[in-house]
Amino acid sequence: GGGGGEEGAVEERRSLAVAAGDAHSVTVALEEPAVLEYAVSTAARTLPFTVSSASAVLARHVASPSGAAGRLELAAGEVCVTLDNSASWLRASHATLSLRCVAVGSAGAAAERAAAAERQLRAGRQARLQARANAEGGGAAR
Image (cartoon, rainbow, N blue to C red):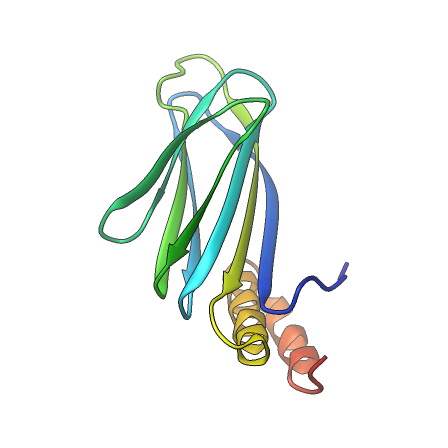
């Protein structure tokens, strides 16, 4: 694993299967204002998706094999990307979701906070990785 990116950037890419008649949400917690770049492409057919904050839908798109993407400047808080396959009664939809959060602010502080946010994000999925990430992330700045 590993491989750094731009300072202050948190990137995530995942392949998702959304069951027929179902929706799948991915939530990202932003500890500070950030720019969220997102892209969704499907294996076949089209798949509507929304990007929303706790209080409002911020963007609506329809993903296809050629992809749909956008960029939003967001305040701190949770943002949710929801892939909506509820219109399909028979078929699951397979999609690739890419998310990239770039903190707004000084690069050093942003990188440290983004690293912390990334550790927190992964800890939500796999708590056992957190101890290792904290041990690695505590020391030298790059």
